Length: 367
Ligand SMILES: NC(=O)c1ccc[n+]([C@@H]2O[C@H](COP(=O)([O-])OP(=O)(O)OC[C@H]3O[C@@H](n4cnc5c(N)ncnc54)[C@H](O)[C@@H]3O)[C@@H](O)[C@H]2O)c1
Image 1 (cartoon, rainbow, N blue to C red):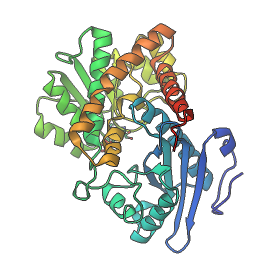
Image 2: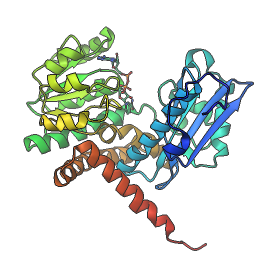
Image 3: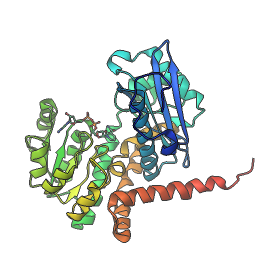
Image 4: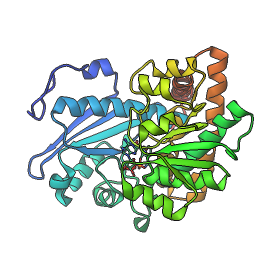
């Protein structure tokens, strides 16, 4: 049972021990109101990198569960993105609209600094590049700052580009050609990532169908690309006559019903945690639908912010994000060879890299 901050909790989830994290740090500063948890899943490939989620969790336990899951997921994402970075993530418990202040962000920055570079932070839900600029006043281990401050800026640029690379790979595997020319692609959610993805697809000659709960988001796309078709909602998108389904809104887009309704041959999108529950990846494979694992194809964003650690260079970051094409293809062939769904093949490949490259740390380099 955890109750470090004394916030209300439900004691139903696994303990830190079961989650097998290297380090979990509870950070508290009453004067600024900071209550944060930093979780480092592993540093086999390098310091943990992952964003800071600022969210009004209903309990400390809920925040802990989230940060443990998210930091583990970052280890896998960073490994397959070819980064020499481990998995980390942080959560700040609170309502960003009410509780975010310069003092709180700077207090948080000092806790990050105290970890001596074992964890690099970035933006996530509830935090923005401008916030990272403030955190960076107290810590050198911050990415995702504004371009004006030497940062990588809006990570959706390479996220969308990377999803497009993953989709090209899925097309090569399924249709024998890496272009989306002449294919109908459905993009569900045209926010920062989906909007940019539509541009890549049209440039490649695809027909694009979109939907979004926000009228404004739809209009923004229609204004720039009047040829895009609009369907009413996510249900209509799944039932639409499309070759590729690209979830770019929230998580959980693929549940049992969606698998049955889906007419597309490929699923490849930017959203995190697309599978509503474990087992959906098997159902997709059984229906002959190729699923490009979300954390592989949406890793362009982390590739973009990770580049900031070396001094940001968009060209270099873009070259790295282009490799998502090869990685995705490799995952599909491992899946075929080993007779497992691509999601399982991706996990295996990530674990292999963490173990094989991480092992090299055992080779003594002298003084
Ligand atoms: N921005 C990044 O760099 C990045 C990186 C990796 C993963 N992701 C993931 O990609 C997804 C999109 O991120 P984003 O930055 O574009 O967010 P965003 O908030 O800019 O866009 C999300 C869009 O989805 C729409 N939406 C919400 N619910 C919907 C529904 N039921 N049906 C249709 N549309 C719906 C919203 O109106 C919004 O326009 C998220 O899951 C995010 O976690 C983003």
